[in-house]
Length: 423
Image (spheres, rainbow, N blue to C red):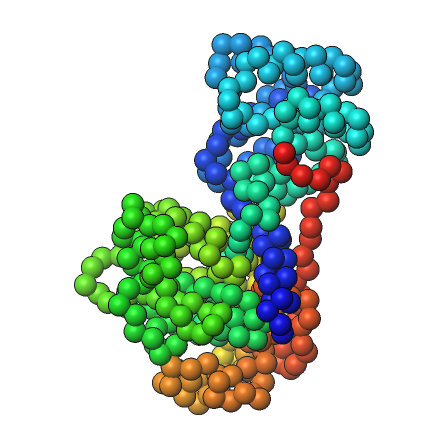
């Protein structure tokens, strides 16, 4: 793959990701219950976590009354009533009360370019034509503060084990390596298991600094510091390694990793998080906030129970995202009673995206050598499975077929609005 093709793929990946909305206030003035309900639903989305959203019925007339004596928020959303001339007149009156920096988004039902131009001439930031989805609305609000096409906007994939010891870290490391090496997309692997992380061992690296330096010094964290903390594993793969020491306690606040993730999104088109098997406020936040969640499970009853609990806990917070991606690992351990993969999947209504057979010799040799399985056995089926899975999670369409293999595909969806860009 040429560098030009690789750059185009990275730009496409960035375009598919909606950046989190920053800490802003959003007031919506609706004439219809349907728009009010849609905005309230959007307020519950993970990407709107930092925003303070308030909905009001009554449209622009209520907004005028409200802001005669109140400070305006960062964003005002207004629904157009039937009389457009009256709406434009009231919009001109509202402009007298708007503070500098207030953005206005207008929602209407008519795809009318003349009306759109009148709105833009008055400084309206965006005109949304109904019908549209919750995700469409979130994208528009996001792009008010995160201009599309300006720099990298990385896609975050969080990989988590349904149970300790199921090989989630191994899957995370091989997936990141495959995305970087086979799909040729610049990737950062962040080892979030600070006391016991194995990414350094698996890539034969022993960096003096890593993710702990960023977590424990958020006031000093910037893109230059983050770049110094990362270790280059190859031309396209960088590692943010865990210290893997027990010299300090690793009790984190809920948002301890927020600053790191914001910077990582600006540094690479793909970020793979190796999330340890703990259930804390910060680990849950990593899972809920990721663009893709991958859960690795072995075919037994404890994994099945835990996976169901994980679905129940993070599913409602990710209602506007795709389903969890399931990787069945260590399938076919000799003499071990197992739940058949088909029965396991049927119990949770979740088809596995990859099924990885048990191969203690191959994985053990790779781990002891600080290599990936594809490096020591290039033609192995497991190496092909990881390549295909890496392509799947980053949304590349040209998936290769192999068995036992992929049972699903990832389709990207792009927002299509009647009027193109945020002003």
